[in-house]
Image (tube, rainbow over all chains, first blue to last red; front, top):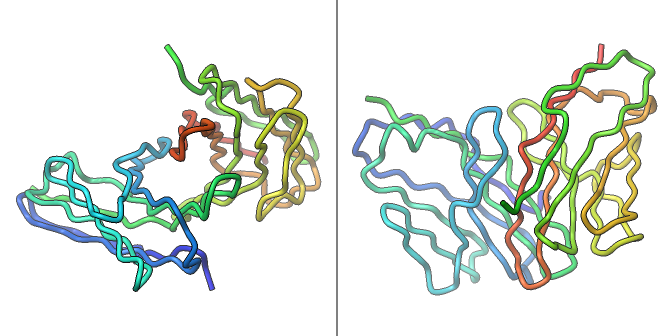
Length: 110
Length: 112
């Protein structure tokens, strides 16, 4: 079983739509969770960390469900500039390697 | 400006040649990582290093070698033993009090 699993998509949504991505992880002891954004042929960049209480940054909301071992990312009022691949990342704990999902591709259509 | 640099951005080599990819960081980070990304796929860990003079194999270390003689530097050598070396190579680092990974801009290696 993979450490982190994501639906690869693609998700094609119109501007202004709300879209949600989920990601599941296999190690119940995992401590840190992140969403990264990767543009075509570029390096991944941190979008947001995911906290147990959930967190919001503008149009983006991230949530963690430890009981079901999944994290989610919600994007409201999608913009053309949101088109990218979104990577789910999990770290079991300090000194351990990071585990990346394969990414979910989002295209926002005018 | 603090950050991670990788050079070169694009690299072309003939099959059978070893090639070394550079990764330098001035963030004073302890941990450094090398990943490989193939088209339409996620990042796969090649090697990582938590401290100077120490490193561990990741999931796909075969055909690669690394060194960590300085905190700032973590070069990756792609040897001729690597069967499919053409890929996008990403270097990352993490600070001691930080869980976030910071990435360099990547090196796109093409071997023909």
